[in-house]
Length: 276
Ligand code: HBI
Ligand code: FE
Image 1: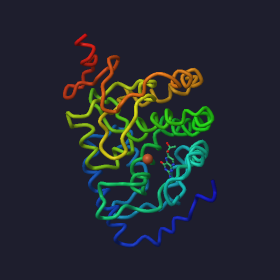
Image 2 (image 1 turned 60 degrees about the horizontal axis):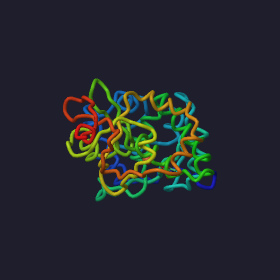
Image 3 (image 1 turned 120 degrees about the vertical axis):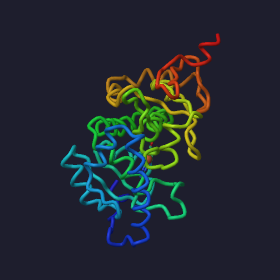
């Protein structure tokens, strides 16, 4: 793991890079209170973040460690899956040591400091996410050993990255991939085009995802604590079942889905069910 960790050299970030942080931070701080879950809004307030500067990882890590034992290290980009799992299992979060260009505000190839800090670390301040991310790291090895990593990555994708949670009857953002994206923050909560389906573990682990556009489907938790129910699941038999059976396209609604109706936040059975 150590060879993937670099010094942040915070003093090497120039005014142009701090300005990109300032733009991204201002846009999201203005938008999120109306679309994000309470845990995310409160999490951002708990962290020592500045509006006009890329965060100093040493200070950020100290604050997080005092809160729940998680620490932050700087990495240059994506680290190998096994290394990522190893870090998460030890409550170490690898944050990108770079920031996107001013001409790429809305497009991201690899997780940069804004995605990782503003998206992931803000949610890591919540005890449920702090425990879930460590569980995910611990589960990573088993999934790799059983050849079921794809299924586990889908779970991560549709929760930690692109998850929604019902709050006061409305879908709210907790996924980092959404909360760090101006366009997707609005799309995921306000647009009528994506499907919003009640979270179901096996359904999620069978559902493919897209990395090059907004998600056509979001899965909605009834409450964040539902993530910790996964701690009591024996993934063995589940991985057995996942070895056969369907892989779902991200665009389709399945007959067994419980679809969240846009607007009044009410759940109802999927359209397909109503027809047959
Ligand atoms: N590395 N730095 C970094 N950040 C990630 O989010 C990350 C990674 N490596 C692998 C990875 N994510 C995903 O493939 C995990 O779901 C395994
Ligand atoms: Fe991420």
